[in-house]
Length: 353
Image (cartoon, rainbow, N blue to C red; front, side, top):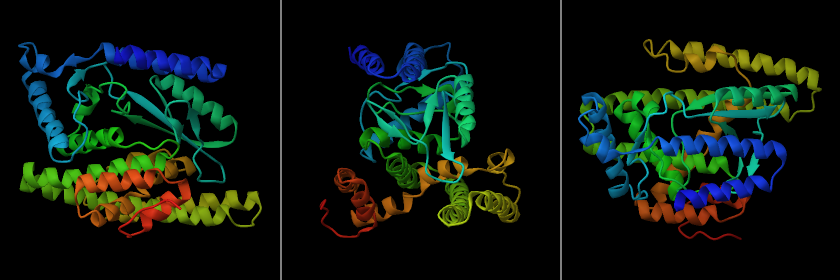
């Protein structure tokens, strides 16, 4: 009944929209239905003699991670990630990010249920590429990113997907914590807030998980990985600041476009220099390989720009998850600008003016 009601709601939402949005909702409904049909109860898969040993071990590990998320991190206790679906591909959705040529402000796609998002997701890569071409023709910078999991915000019981199993235990735990955090709290029309909150929860939760479930080697490897990730994010955000200053200047657009290229060349060179200290670690080479533009930088900042502020909020909450979630929920109810101001505040009492 829950599934039927959700799909009917999506259909009705589509019927109230334009033809282009109707087409988009159609592919979303079709893709989600394919995913739901492919689900198998996790206990059934684990008990089946047809399940390969390696797959069974991985799914059992995810079950432990899933229990940890609800028991220790106070994330939703439901049937999400209690089933398994193999749809025959690594990525379940392809997200398209876009920005104007002289702006880092993400192009928004707005829908009746989830509000406005800083990206648009497609179940078929070819559909995503067609949408990208339309945006490029309109002068936008674009970026396409494949994702192995996403949250339906509690509308459906999200399954474990085959593409998720290509990650190691640390990456899996981080992903599951992140997606469940979206179910814990979601604020319409503020993708940056939602993604940073979920990433902060995932990183905080991962620290707890490694402390109790990880080996010494895993804790060391993750500390090194996170240090490199933070260096990468700091580098990208620093060049984003340079671009923002350029785009807000009074220079003519022709000069801005020339300096834009110079700044991106500088980012590429700075990364190459930073990478020399990583001992052959090449995780971000692919990101740089196909060129840089505003949309790529916007995708990074959307997920990471507010993360340090949520870390601070967690500290102010006494590192108690229930208090932290309550505090963030209060912040989320405030208008956009006050939301940002309260994330910077260490005041014990939170109110919207």
